[in-house]
View 1 (cartoon, rainbow, N blue to C red):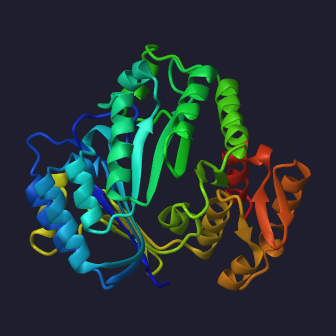
View 2 (spheres, one colour):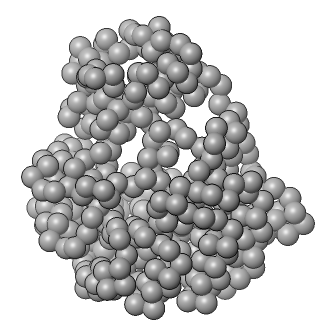
Length: 374
């Protein structure tokens, strides 16, 4: 498996969002410079220097100071040649003109902004630090310096969010000069503030039906625009699909650098240690900072191929599956496929197996069918 992509994790935030369960820490009093030194040391261990895609996520990479950001960017560009897509996650209120200029200077050509909603009350509830005005300013700054692709994250099925609220946020997003929208329904994850509030009865979510209505509206509304859906939660203008995320959905290899980062290299899936101090203690003496690793069995690889590939509108390539595993997909999943076609949840056309519109709405149920059937 030739690795051509990498993910870099910056686990620091200016504020901890109420719904987020990613590996992240409040940046104040954290050993940020020491962490960057160790991160760079880990990146130096990579055997690959030529990458097609690189994604810097978090946490919030833009929480770094300008000096720290430049140090990171210098290290990345001295270690790697990035041929295609160099992406950075960003909070709108942290995307100052100077920071965007720095990103552009070092070759970043795609920004993924955590917008979530344009409703100020919901932004406050989510623990976001930005206001709608910050979003407009950040997009202006990015366009001013010539960033090629701008993506916004929008959330739905939020506490106190009505269908009209979501429609309004989507309409505002579509009125802006952006190229890509990622939209996800809220999932209450353990160890988040929202999860604890919900368990105590202090958080009321819209019904599942309303969540489905929001998702159905999302697809219908974006189908009327220059955006096309290419994955369950992702929509792009022509030429602006996330090439990095497609690596995950195609079940291809990638490096993961940083505390809590995951990678998939030479048939090994691994996850690095989470706490920043533990990560630093591993890296400083030259140890590999891996918390755990597994080598998926052939059965697990087949399952991954199905439930990851089905996320994409194009779906799973029957030919690619059979070349990869040297077995007919009908032999492995024939009964499951027949049942899902009969239920109207998948369709098989032109050598691909893909979700129907109904299948997209209840995608997790379809994915589970492939986990249970081998």
